[in-house]
Length: 119
Image (cartoon, rainbow, N blue to C red; front, side, top):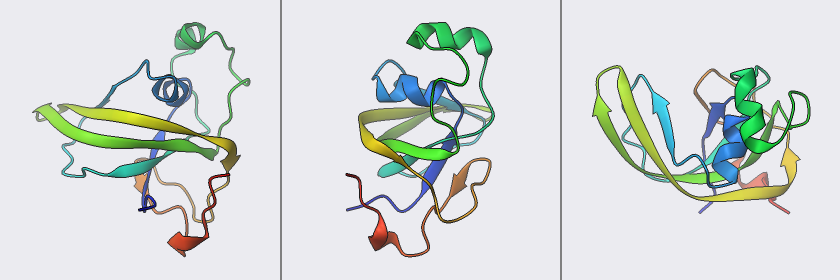
């Protein structure tokens, strides 16, 4: 089943997820979602010192596009400090531009979910 929603994640954290180095996404809100989702690399960068962990500089990683998928398997923690557990990341061969406008956290990237082609 193709993902239906995307999670906005700043670079280089999106890259760390795809490299299987980042297995937990820290969020202030709980989630009951337990499915495969798109990873949207937001246009706004994360902490600049984190780019060295992936051997890249700001501007070298794709932004404003869907870069892959990941499964959310669990959510632990307490109010304001939740750990979203991630597994089985899959990188797209070529990043995909979403059709719908990205939102700060969740959004549906395609009006018709059957049009996405991962190749």
